[in-house]
Image (cartoon, rainbow, N blue to C red; front, side, top):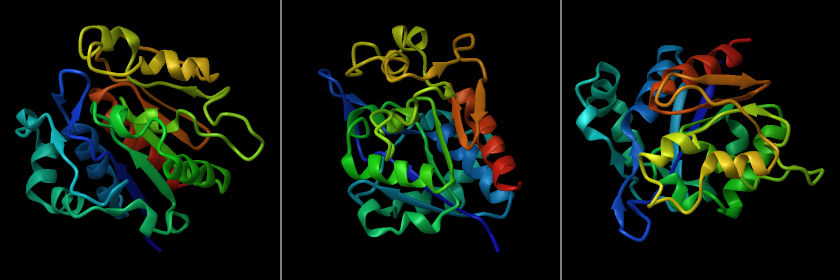
Length: 223
C-alpha cells in the first residue's frame, strides 16, 4: 500500500511592518515533492484556512524540479489545498512543512497545527520541515508537557542567514526560538545544504536543504 504524505502550507502572502510579499518558497516544496512522488507516495496538501496558498521565488522556475512542480500536478494540487480542520491527519504516514517567510506569519502559534503535529509525532509518524518551516514545531507540547523540540537534533534557517535576508520582516529569529525550547541546533555555513534526521524528525536549514529533507523522509518511510 502506498505511503501517504500530507504537506501543510502557510496561507500568508505578506509579512512584517513593511508588508513584504511572501509565500511558500518554490524549491522548498517542489524538491521534496519530487522525492515523494518519485517514491510512489500519495501527496496531499492542506493549509490552515483552506484558501489558496501563495508561492515565492518563482524566479527559480527554470530549475528542473521546480518547473516540473509548476507545470505538473504539484502546483495544481497545492492551489487546491484543503483545510487542515477537515482532514484526518491520522491517515497519513508523514507530514511535511515547507518554508518561505510565510510560515513565520501564521504558523508559530496556530493551536490546531500544534495539536496535529504533537499527535503525529506521538503515534510514531514522520515529521519533516525545512528552512522557516520548522517554526511549525515551535510551541508544540507533547502529552507529558514537554516541548517536541526539546533535546532534538535539528536545524532551520539560521540567525546568521536571517541577518542578511529578512531580519526586519520576521517577528523573531527562528534558531534562537527553537534553541530556547531546548532544541540541539546544528547550523552549517549560510545557504549550504544541511539536513538531518533525529529519529522520525527531519529538518533542513534552507532552500539548498530541501531535497535532502525529502530524501531522508523517504528513507525513513521505506524502513
